[in-house]
Amino acid sequence: MNAEAENISNGFNVLIVDDEQKICNLIKVFLSMSPEFDKIVTANNSLQAIQKIQNQRFDLVIADFKMEGRTGIELIHQIAKAYQNNPIKYMLISGALQKEDVQLAINSGIKHIVVKPFSRNQLLSKVYEVMNITEPAGNHSKDESEDQ
Image (cartoon, one colour):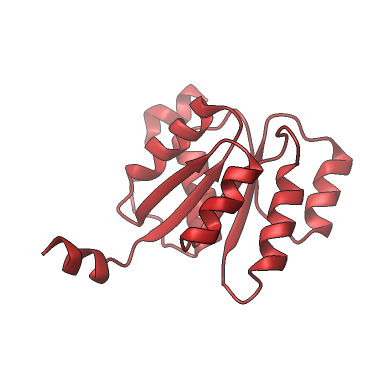
C-alpha cells in the first residue's frame, strides 16, 4: 500500500542546497509544514547537489548564493543547461547580495530571490509563487508579521 501511495502522490520534490546545514534544516522544516511538498532533500555543496539531481527528479531547486567552490547562480546555470528538458524551477537564497549579484542572477534567468534572514511565511510565499501554488488562506499569521 505504501508503494501505491507513493505513486499517487502529487506533491512537489524539492532540493535545498546550502553549505550551512542549519539553513538546509530550517528550510526543510518550513516546507515540511506544507502538504504541497512530497520529498525534501538537502545537499551541502554543488557536487552533492549534482549527484542528487542525477538520481532523483526535482520540481524545485533552492540554492544559496554563496557556497564554497561554486555560487548558487553557477550551480543553477549548470543544472538548467544539463536538464533543459525537465521543467525544474529555481530559487536563490542569500544573506549578502550586492547589486551586481542580483543583476547577474536576473541575467542568468533567476527571477526568484529570498534574502536571509527570512520568516517561514516569507519563504513559503515565495516558494508558492515560484511553483504557482495557491497560497492557503491564513498562511500569514498576524502575530508573526508583527514580530518582523
